[in-house]
Length: 206
Image 1: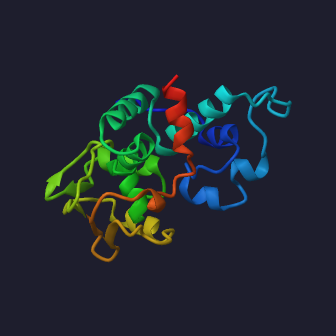
Image 2: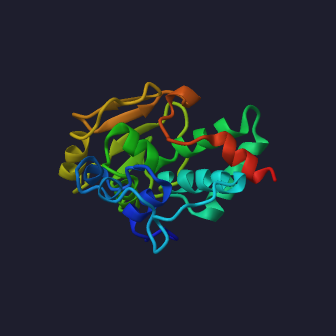
């Protein structure tokens, strides 16, 4: 499976804000953005021309990195979103939010999307009673998520739940039994991603 193995703190610094790619570390003073708030590289502290294209590109890159999606995957998501009824940008974010790895983070069952992907790939979770090991699996209304009966990662998952704030209204979680349910698709106001999706639509529309 293709994946991004680059330094995660550099990705946050490149976008100029916390993308919470490293879970608990992002909440401490060890966060790369807190320690060095300028972009990485030799010219990171130099002045950069803010062209329209650059702003749109940075927004797309930020969304990719936030959800942990590669370039080709992201383009496919956009093409699917553009074919659906409704607002393309909102459709795109909704599809990204409903990825299995992202939903585990929203539920508090993983501290980061990278940890969520690892737990899914190793078969620690089931959807509607069937083991699912595909991080990009699209969850649907009324899907029931549960830890696998023979999972050895129970303590890791419980540790992650301690970092959880509020579970979004479109999800229902039981942190005691480590089960959850997708109640419905999220509305745009319920998506906490730091992304201006209209800029991404403008970039791909050129």
